[in-house]
Image (cartoon, rainbow, N blue to C red):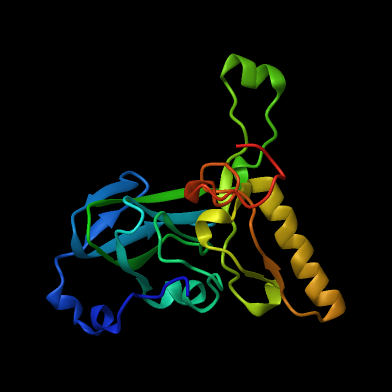
Length: 216
């Protein structure tokens, strides 16, 4: 489960027993965490494709959970498969207003936590000249968001770190899945491997690349 924790004991602890929460924001989108259990406040930009990533030694993660009502859809409809390895990535579409969610991170080694996002305004096709001159950038990769409701017509099958694609591709697929669900009253279509968070072939991080749809 996407927001699963490697032991119920961590969630059973009262929040007062944890260190004071630190905060990730658009102005401070990354932070370092030491070993142990940390509670983080995350200020989520409005109307954005948002990813929260924990990076560090591959087997450092003991538990990760998103807390609070704003994170309920992510907890309910996360990937069917999560292997407990880092990087751990949770992706979703944010609400119409800036919101705050809480993350509980439990690790045995120091890690980095990052807040990454893109908006529909970033879905602009660059010109060859703009790219060459360095005044325009390629459209960003975004994590395929956990569906907010079953009506969206899709689910996530692979670990979040393997569910990245260019923003225009993700938007087009989301529209197609919702239309398919509405027209045919079909079961959800599950999204498997796309690209890694770094644009390489899925499972390249484990030296087991899964498919050859693109080169890293």
